[in-house]
Image (cartoon, rainbow over all chains, first blue to last red; front, side):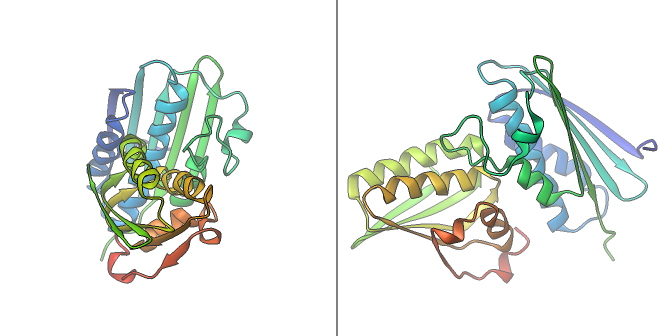
Length: 144
Length: 111
């Protein structure tokens, strides 16, 4: 991947109130690239899912830091990396299965499905005990 | 609380407002469940026309309330879903268990 045209980094605590902050902050930064409102909302939705995962799964019974890097690239791509130093995922394939949730209750188990649905590329890497990194890429159109 | 509830006959209508995410879903869930156990409506209608953002927590909110009312045979209706929210809801196959009432979808497609 070439160098981004512009990049920003965020670090914040894994408190659920920051879910709204994170998606709005990322979309405010990404919005400097011309794109449709739809595309911007796609980014917001995908970021919200990834950050929620870090909060409810990564840092299940604790509070830790969540790191976001958002890059804007020449080829009209927005790339967002969401990383936590939480418990990690034992079985990524299983975690990504639609309707699977390790928590049950009111969690639908569709976080990764939504991320896949609203972005062009989703990459998840994780090490149990070390944390999880989610990379989201969204190709955006140039508004006329 | 960003919601308004109205009981009309056998129906409990809930107008949801603002952002629905993991953070906001818990108080919404508690308020709706409390009203369900108090009124035991035959039909629960959730209206999304004033929702400004929703992620998969919205699906969890709907599925959980469906589980709640189906224990005594209640039915679920969803209304005011924009195309975006419908797309998210459909990932769960919710249209098989809930009646989805048409709204002005095209007008809210950008939400």
